[in-house]
Image 1 (cartoon, rainbow, N blue to C red):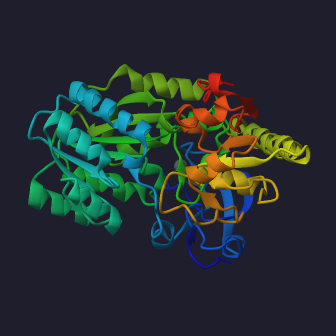
Image 2: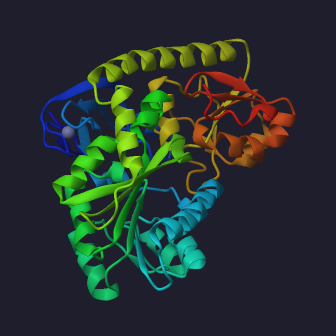
Length: 427
Ligand SMILES: [Zn+2]
């Protein structure tokens, strides 16, 4: 029943343990999004796994139906945080925001879980004067972080890493986990390890793509095998309470197509702010705690994919050339869901040196750098990394000024020119 690399199939919810799970989206068999191939043939022959999303009727967590072995998923993880300027701006905003809301002081300890190349902690160290420790399993990233002056424990997050931090550095006032919680299978152990490690009034701050935006903005392309959960406040609160902890604040963020920052402390250690009830009420009244929203969404996504195929294929048939921007995981889901290959998309432009020269999994589309793009500009550039559409459009303005057109695929097919950039999130 299981294919190579599948650790387990989900039969009960990872947050609440309930077994009333309903499948609401099935994108078919898909390759691993970050598994870039050495040749087009290898890319097309790549192993595929079922990509299905389940809804828990008890706590409202959306989750993939299978868990792929993290050693396979993350062994070729090429993405580096600090490459992305928009992300660095987000880090600076986060540092200022937590200084005010949590009253961090110089010398306090801050831990970042899966802190990648240390981008966030470098900013925290510079802006706040705090002590920092990064925990990340990727050895190449850990080396980069250490070289940037960010001490790094090369490990997945868990009780062992938490224990090591307490004995070597003391108890953190803040543990951050940005864009990692949704990648975690055993979320209970993940939060429990943070609890064991934190100071009495310490805070675990999770930031993850918000399940409401996922549905509302039709972000089906954010579904990939690294991304195990699609999270609302309701299941997060449930998880915290099961561990005798408390969600005491929630803040909305624009990054990654709409994220939330959720603050969790030990029960009674922090005053619970009105934002918590406000978010929960909004989720409930807008139907996100009910299965009907998800059943409707499935139909909307089918129509969206059909429309993308129709519109982009028709441009191609009319003789236009088409390329994509950013060989990101979400681009991979979109291209494979649309069954695009080199007969439609000539190449994908990407700024990450490790990706250039390789081939997009499943589709076999070659990945090139900007020099190829500017030497041989397409008539249309599909912005696969639509969450950074403004940044991509402004950084390729010569292309737009020369008459090149951009296609933004999510939440609906849209052609824009240079002057219409600030449209990445509008409907
Ligand atoms: Zn559940």
